[in-house]
Amino acid sequence: GAVEAVMRCLDRHANDLKVQQAACEALKYTMQYFRYQGTARDATPIEAVVSAMTRHQSNAKIQQGLCKVLTAIAESHEQNKLPAMQAGAIEAVVSAMSTHADKQWLQNDGCEALRSMTEGMADSQARAREAGAIEAAVVSAMSTHVDERWLQCDACKALRSMTEGMADSQARAREAGAIEAVARAMQRHEGSGWLEDSAMEALSSLASDNSYNIRRI
Image 1 (cartoon, rainbow, N blue to C red):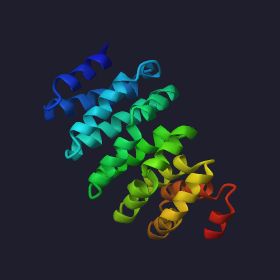
Image 2: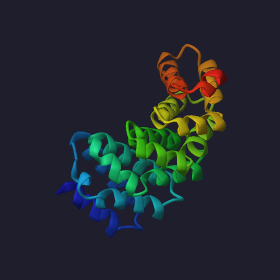
Image 3: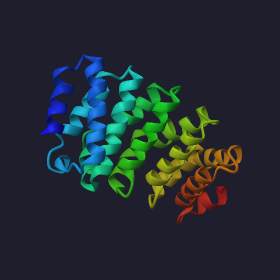
Image 4: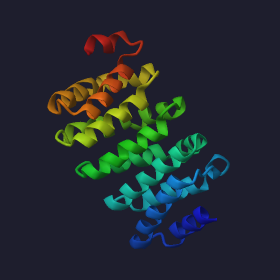
């Protein structure tokens, strides 16, 4: 029902920005309050979201709204993460963050989407690495918006999810300056307990079974 109806609106009114924004809000709240599992069998809804992100690449507000939808989809059911990856959702988020690097509020939601889609999913972690999510999106966001504590926190959470248990991703993060970015966030926002917790989790993930990163830290 309702999810499919909203998806049809996304497609039917592809060039109507107001409809697209309203659809984003409707989808986000629907996914948050109901455990939607349809995408585990049918990737069409996620494909519609990715398609909308591609169509409206220059509109930062729509990109932000659709990042929130992807987060809600990934968090509503574990089985939704695979079709999200297969539909190109990770690449769409990286593109949105790179295109609108100056929009702190979009960077927040982009990091949240990357975290939710890669957490506990080795295939998605690898896809994020190859899509440039670590360096082009997360580390860049941390360097551009150094004074935004919430963004620094969300970026640390995304780094943890994208690198946990993945040696190749840990190496990519080290090369991209992720360790220095996390350390800078802790120093700049000393006393912010929730940020420091997320930062230490990110460093633990980067250092796990990785002697090179341990020495760097």
